[in-house]
Each structure stands twice: as structure tokens, then as C-alpha cells.
Length: 320
Length: 309
Image (cartoon, rainbow over all chains, first blue to last red):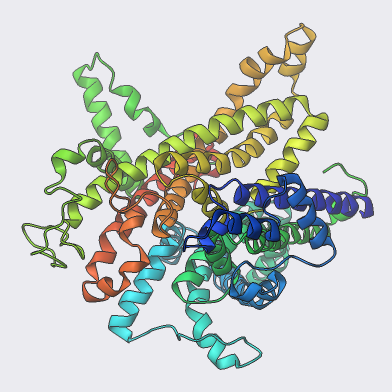
């Protein structure tokens, strides 16, 4: 068990290192560096060179990478090229809670809606209720998030005079104001995610319901509720957790769209804006933090296997 | 358990020597298919229709998709403009028709390229194992730890935006997914008796991989391909929506469904809200059709799963 966790942990660190390299290379391979974006006005060549040297952009790539990485390890992610050279970490620190809250909302909604819907749909297989839930799920799986969000903004505005608040406040500053901005984007992401959760729950429950021990439970004369909740549901949750873990990276990606459309100052929005302006350190920092969240989530999913499934927990040094 | 589905033979039955009795048989099979799986049948119809629209776009479009008519801006649907006109007076119907080309081409090209690359990587690393496998796996983890949309944004900014860069980047993102899938199948096959027998007879690794292992990975890859293609179309839409995919006035490809919904146009959407409906519905329907057909293919290839998903 311990060695399994240590191995997964070591792999996670290697993956994070790779993420940092990918983020660094991709943004540095772009034509034109931050200076060409920053200096819309023409400057004498020598002045540009001097600025470049100040920002460390004239050094070889590997040296720039090393300077950045060693800074990150010391807790210094560098400074933004814009906004009075605000430290990158300050920017990320302000954006992180927004994205975390949004993703948490989406996951909570998807579990509250998707798991019961999936169970009911499986238990009452082929009933009208099952058909309706499956249709709901199929639509959720195929509707583009950016289209759904645009429809909400346009038709919500026309029919219900809905419009997202223009100013944003963190949850701890003003919970009501915060939720006013967050509930709709959370619902949109939550719908997309609950469609997947429902589908996987349904197929997993159907699979478990075929098992011998479930037949035994019925044969013992246990009530439907006991069989479904204690015997079936408990054993069908592992695939659901795996899929939720895998979908985490997709939901983080979708936050770029909803944060952009609903004016939420989250990580997705920062990523979008900083890539457009080639704010190197901000891009690298944001992508690294997003990557760290994904890697941490994968690690948690691995942990949850060990916790939920005694076969993994007791396997000791099983090869995985 | 589920019985073998006789409907599988529908396309096969339409051979060149179509005897009358045979035709009748095929016809009744088709009817049974329509009755039993109306959703699949509807999606097959939608998919074929979209493919036809994409191929014959220049003949189906009623107007030039790029030429705006300043006298006809933001008009509602009419006999002249089926889906109305956009903010600079371009015919939305013709633009939606051309958008089908972009979506289908991105879906097919990115899926094909990504699947081939991923399958090769998965085959080699799964069969050889060892350090190479470990190293490649971590690189794949690294690529997958960055959300696809963020990755796309990063790369789309490197190259000039356009069809080629969208397809290449999507292929890079698809490859790790497929390689993982293929690797899993290869790992389970590596210890099978027929592989061990081939090894004992002295077959070289390349031959074992190509002749004995590759064919067995086809079914799961084919099934995954429909989901992947749907995802690729959605990703292209999102990228064009954010202004980094196919531009709304591309001289060659004309436009993408995602680009028609660009948020810069929100003020126009509020004045003529139907502008939002058609491109998005076209994309959603296409993805829906592809996914449902993929599900149906999976049920046929693996009857055990029928009705569980």
C-alpha cells in the first residue's frame, strides 16, 4: 500500500516537471515575444534590446527555463509583464478560488443529479423514466458548452432578463453576490458533467446488478432499498469516481469558456488572457498550477481506489 | 443474454447480385431496424444528410457565404434567406452549409491522424514494455494533465490560425488517449497462448505486433473513434468560438460553426436571437449523430454491453 502510494507520488512529480517543460516550450516557441506585444509603439532597436536583457529574454532557452523553475521551487513564480509587473503568484492566488469554486459546484451538481438519476434509470430499465433520463444525458453529452452558455446569455436575457453581474466578489467577501455570479456557470458545467456521471452510474449499476451476490441478497428476501443502496450502489461507485477524476481535466478546460463569457476572473480566464498577450511567466505559472490541480486530482482518485476497494487496499505491493 | 443481432447484415445484403427474394429480405430487415432502433436510424439519416451537405456545399448553398449584403442585415428567416442574415448581411443558411465541411473534415482528419499515431505508440510501448514504456507513459501523462482547450490555446497562438494547425494539435491530443487504449489491449494480449505460440515459432516482434496483436485492437479503437471524432468537432468549435480556430471569413473554408457564435457578436445575438440557434444546433446534431452511431457499433461488436450504456 505505502509503496504503491510512493510510486504514484513519484510519477506525479515527473508528470508535473513535464507539464512545466511543455508549458515553457509552447509559449516560447511563438513568433514574437512579449516585447513585440507590449511595445505596440515603435522603439529604437537598442532600447528594445536593453529591455529584452532586463526581462531575461536574450538568454538561451534552457537557461531561461532553469531560472524560472528554480524560482518556482523557491516559491517565486516571477512577475507579470503587464499590470505594473504584479507578481504572478498574486494573480493566481486571486484567480484560483474562483475556478476551484466553479469546478466544485459542477462536481456537486453532477453527483446530486447524476448518481440518483443513473441508479433510478438502471433499476427501472426501459421505463419511460429511463428513456427521459437517457435523453437528458445524451443531450448533455453532445451539446457544446459554448453554445449552451451563449443560449443562456442571449435567451435568458430576452425571456427572463437574466444577466450575470458585472462585478465579481469572492465568496468570503459577500456570499450572496458571489453565488449570484456563480450559479449559472456552475449549472452549465454541472449539466455537462452530470450527463456523463449519469451514464456511467447507470451502466455500472446494471453491471453490478448481474452479480451473484446481488441475486443472493434478493433471495435472502432483503428489501429493494437495502439491496440497491447497500449492495449495488456501494459497489458501482468506483467507475463513477474514475470517470469523475478523468473528467476533471475536461471541466477545467471548459472553465476557460464560461469564465470568459460570464466575466469570472478565474484561472481559465487568466490563461486565455495571458496567452493572448504572451505574458510568459503568467502563462507558465497558470498552466503549471492547472497541471498541478489535475495531477493532484488523479492522485486522489488513485487514493480513493485504495480506500474504496479492499482488493486494492489489501493487495500490498500489487503491480499497477 | 442478448441474442445476436441479425440487422448487422443490412449493408452486406445489398450485394451486386441482388435477387428479388434477397431484396425483400433486406427490405424487411431494414424495416425491423427502423422499428427496433429508431434513434440509431434517425442518427444514421442525419449523418448521411450532413455528409451530403458537406460534399455538395457549393450547390446547396443559396448565397455566397462570405458576401455580405449591407441592405439585408440581421434579417429573420425568409424564403430568400432560410436562416436569416447576420450582422453584415451574410446568408446564415449558406454559412451553416459550408460549416459542415469544416466540422466533418476536422473530425475525420484529426481522429485518423491521432488514432494512427496513438495506435503505433501504444502497440510498441505495450509490447516492448520496460524503460521506453515507462518514459512514454509519463510524457503522455504530461500532455493529458494540461486541459485540451488550454493546450489548444497555447499552440494555436504559435502558428497562424487555420485548418492545418487545428487538425495537427487535435491529433497530438488524441494520440495519448488512443495509445493508452491500445496499450491496455496489448498488455492483456501479450500473455495469450497464440502470441506465445508465435514467439515460440520464432516470429519477430514486428510480425507478432502487426499480424497477431494489431487486428485484435481494432474493435475497441473503432468504437472509441466515434467518441473521439465528436470530441474533436466540439474542440474545433470551441477554439473557433474563442477566435483561435477557423476564422469566420476564411477564404478557403468560408467559416466554422463555432466562429459564427463568436462572443464579439453578443450584441447582435440579442437583437436577432435566431442567429445563435442554427450553427450550434448543426454542431450538436452532428456530434449527436456520430456518438449514437458509435454506440450502436459498440453494441454490435460487443453484444454483452447492449443496452447498458
